[in-house]
Amino acid sequence: MIKIRWRKLDPEHVRRYTFHERAVHLIVAVSCVYLVLSGLALHTPFLFWMSTVLGGPASMRLFHPVLGVFYFVFLVYMWWMWRRDLRFNQADKGWMLNMEAYITNHDDDLPPIDRWNAGQKIFFWMMMTSGVGLVISGMVLWWPEYVPWNLQWIKFLAIILHAACAFVSIGGLMIHLYMGIFLVKGGFGQIVTGEVTRAWAYHHHRLWLVRVTKEHTDG
Image (cartoon, rainbow, N blue to C red; front, side, top):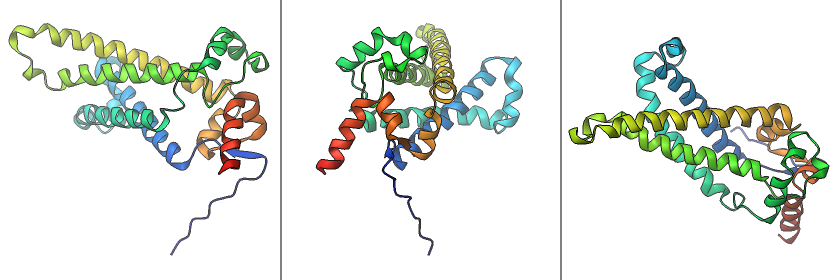
């Protein structure tokens, strides 16, 4: 029998994401990327060539709406999993007033924050809101034959809403990738290993470090 050995954290590191959290994040990320690529392929003939690497036109047309529901279900589950950390607090107001310091990498000028800053919370709620719009409009586009003949304007509204929410999601995804991979040093590594150094946590998320350290000590 194969035994999985988990590496113990050394005193210089702290667990930022559990394996469960990282698995859910990976599922949402992979499904989101597929939806973006397949959606762009379906949206314009100039990008339809991407369907050949996404399972073929027929399979892509089937997988896109099915995976869209799958993505939204896990997005809602992600909210449930992180609902405590996604609440806006007093520290977020100070962060918003000093957002320029975050963009220019002058984190020393930012107030202490909890697990996520206001920008990360705004990104999540932007993806959640656009996800709701995508699901609602997607259902109409998935089963257009069920729209009554005297309410055909709903189809056109669904097309506009679906495209608008898709572009919001794509823009948010691009910003999220840029911030996590290039702007914030150590941002990508933590979602892979689930660990950060205590120095990194103190510098970027001081309130969170104090809270989890206290919970660990009390436990």
